[in-house]
View 1 (cartoon, rainbow, N blue to C red):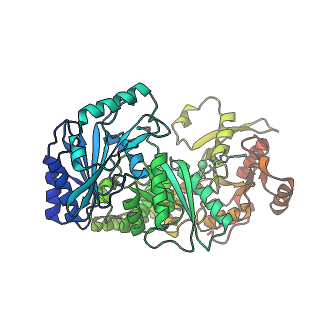
View 2: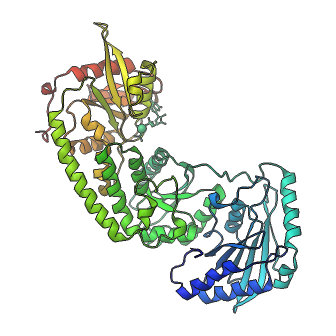
View 3: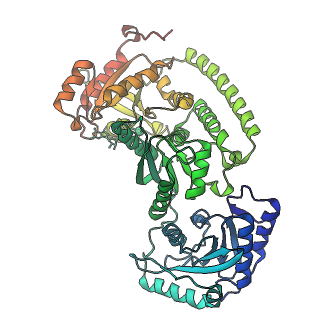
Length: 562
Ligand SMILES: Nc1nc2c(ncn2[C@@H]2O[C@H](COP(=O)(O)OP(=O)(O)OP(=O)(O)O)[C@@H](O)[C@H]2O)c(=O)[nH]1
Ligand SMILES: [Mg+2]
């Protein structure tokens, strides 16, 4: 059975069947479209009250029938025929519309991305084709397309498609490589357009910080932020978060920069995501989904993986219905890691059962882990875990410390998790060489959605296994004091964390003297470093040894310990 793409909601089964019959249509190779086929499309569009897009190859075969606009129904890059960069894709798009208007910029950019042979608009009035527009690509970076004036259907159907398209392709080939190079097919990274919505209750400062943090999160998840859009609103639009005009702007910009994912800086509901995806034509996710994706990539222990899958399923549940097939994004990418795509498509009930089962497994594992911990022997090599707010510089510090120290990769540890590395420190007095394992963790995040707390804690499993903590703080961040407090709050909720820790103020290369003095007075025990400038690293190493050697009893034990 041939698939009908786009938004098929509300379309009757009998109509779907007739749309499927379009796949049997065979157009002559030397025409854009026959008058008969144009009339069929007009009639069907009228019947279903929606625009239809038909994608036709050079042999005249209909290869894709979709409901929606050319932007909403684009063919994904990896499904387009692979042809040289100097040629068109060999596919044209024929679409219906209900008002006589030339193709808008967004549709033309969609044509560029797919390198369509042509884009044809048929204006439908009273189930008849009234007038038509023809657009095609032209190798001029300033003005990369040509749009015809309104043509009658006869004018259009008399054009010699094969001759024209050969001519257009020659022009493009003559212009040489790189004319339409903006679309780089093949990159597996998510190309993200960020959208920030500043409502009344958010100060400009917090809004800016939140956006900066989100850029960092998207990058941590393996995406690239191509551009950011912002809107101020009293409150989010109930259907589409931002207003209608803004949705159009987002659509256009997403097309222009070649984004394949929109990320909102606030949580959006399942139906808002659906409405936006309908309009914009590419997947829309929110901050929570990005965070979940990072957790899914970082979770290593069995419990961590279970917890993350649990959180992902719970997040997905309300979002299952109505995510059209064309939205299912196979392969890598934000929002696709973790529970497989097949699960996405199965019934709610199956997922609910899976959630219950996971919950049970998690409980069992927790009990098991507690037993293991009781029996745990003193580890031979002490472990220090780097914890702290996202962007504090934990990973940078880990790299700087280990690259400097471990010159020859110790085979024994080369197979270890890439985020756990060994450093060797020479004790100045005794000249004794001592090894420490340093382990990196997922950064703490501001306003972590409560539903993700368990998943987050589970990704911090390493912390629980460590002998002591290095709490890294970005002292150049204006809100560094808040960061310390929120990290300590989360840690305090974890019953099994090590009692020993030291605060490591990082990025002192970017800090005023005054701030240093203040921090020193408030945290006299802290260490001050710059990972990038390699300042204070020796002191940090000495403090690390002291920390490990310090007997646990000598340390004030927080009230939640037992
Ligand atoms: N100026 C300055 N920048 C630094 C320093 N250390 C790290 N950075 C920068 O801070 C940014 C974040 O560093 P990361 O090491 O990725 O931070 P992280 O704590 O691992 O972040 P998460 O993995 O999200 O928790 C990077 O752009 C680093 O280059 C430093 O000492 N000085
Ligand atoms: Mg990191």
